[in-house]
Length: 120
Image (cartoon, rainbow, N blue to C red):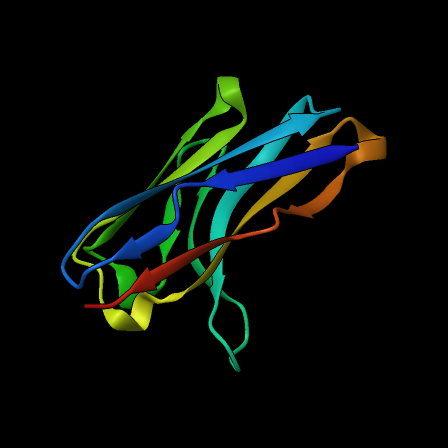
């Protein structure tokens, strides 16, 4: 079984910063990629940022230049540094991991999410 645990959410004023962390644990020997998604009330879940095991990254246009995704392969962890936060960044943020090894564990896994609220 695989578990993803996020941390670091909270309430922040516009222009502020937060750092989200996510660690994957369980029967894991290879992760292809990890990333962050978010979902605001009444909206679909959307990709915020992702990183592959090779270190390639991609970002939603709305967060480019403000958010930075990074990973630690040894810890099966992914981080999201969020700067210059805006009210429209308010959402529940979910960690995702694409696991490749071992084969019985292969698949896409989600954390339970952490709430980020940007408000004055």
